[in-house]
Every structure is written in structure tokens, then in C-alpha cells.
Length: 266
View 1 (cartoon, one colour):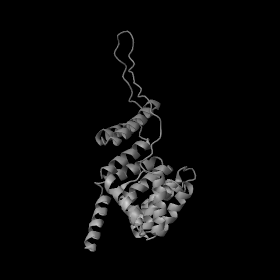
View 2 (cartoon, one colour):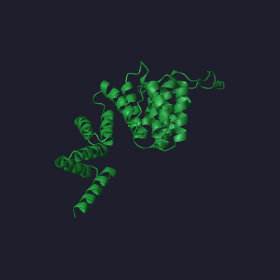
View 3 (tube, helix red, strand yellow):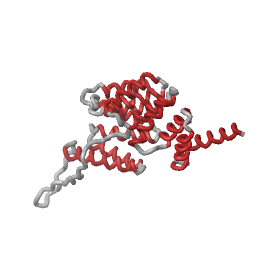
View 4 (spheres, helix red, strand yellow):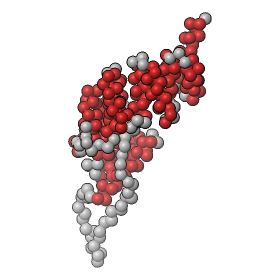
């Protein structure tokens, strides 16, 4: 899946000084601080800090920074969006959904927000709603990366075994960006699932030409080569999978497959 994109530069947090009157009089009573340029910049900074904490898996501190950002700027959709992502990573789907809804209420025409929300909805199995969100993203004429929404819609449809629709979406993504990693690996997986193994091999080879191998990509390649009867390449990628990712589920499947073959040959 593409992780969340947050825009904006880092800005220094400005100190707010209290004004005091001259001549030894009592300090002037201050009005409650309203949202202004300084607080909006501070909110952006806290969102960026939160992203850093999420990357380091310090979710508690990240959550504090995001809540502070929302307190500083209640219309900062990046803060809500990032908080939603944080909650989803923790399996708190109800809370994540609520944050996405708040962000959309503020900025309903944000295609990137709809794309992210769609990815979340697909993850929790609300596919039809997810597809609606993806459509809101890729039909927006101002969305410069609409191919990402097409790719995400295709991957979501693939999980639902809606293969024809999935391929349509994935091809639209690849038409714009022929090297889009998520679309290439989804097309390869589609080839495996529909038993079009030459297609699976072609797309996973294209993926590996531009991207580092992963347990998922090697598992696709292993199955494609095995189905095509290419024993040399099957063994090559199977060994690579077990060697580079020994703790992965995919490595366990390869080893189980090998044991089953040995038993059949006895």
C-alpha cells in the first residue's frame, strides 16, 4: 500500500510574549489566544514532528503532537489525516474513521484525502465505500497523482476477486506511470490469481527491474516460474526468498512446498 503524503515546510515555533504595562502596574489581562498565522505554523510543525515519531514507532508522542496541532489549528486537515493513520496502525478503526470524517468535513474537495480514506476503508473491508472514495479522487481534474487512486482501487478490487474491474483500474494507473510499483505488483498478483502465469512473470520482472525484492514480490515470482515449469528460475528465486527473508510467511510457504514435493517423490 503508498504511505500518507503530508505537505508543508517546517516552521519555527514562535514564542508568544505577554505585554506588561510600565510604571509598576499590574500585568494587562490577556484575551484568549485565537487561531492566527503563528499558531497555524506551529500546528504544521507539530504535524511534521508527529510524522517523525510515527516513523520511529513512538505513537504516544505522535498522538500528543497531533492533538496539539488540532488545538492550535482546528482546520488543519493534515493533522486529522495523520491522526487517522496513527489510529489505523494501532487497529483503532472506529477512531481512525472518525478522524477521516472530520478531515473530509473540513475539506471535502481534497482528492488526496479521499484516496487515503479509500485505502483505509478497503483495509477494513468496506469495499463499496472505498471505491466511492477512490472515484472522488481519480475523477478530480486537479488531482495530479490520480494514478495512485486508480492503483489503489485496482488493488482493492483484486482482494475482492473482481478481476476484470481490477485490471481496468490497474491499466489506467500504468498508462500514466508505467513504473508504478504498487500497480506492477498488483498486476503480477492478478496474473497468478487468474492463472495467467506469463503475465505474472512479465509484470513481476518489470517490478524487480525498478524495485528492491520483497517477500511478496519473490513469492509471486516463485509461483510464476514454478507454474511455467522453469525449474532453474524457480529454485533461484525460492532460495533468494528463504535466504533474504527467512522469517517471512512467504519463506515458510516455500519451505513447506519443498517438503511436500520431497514427500511426493519418495
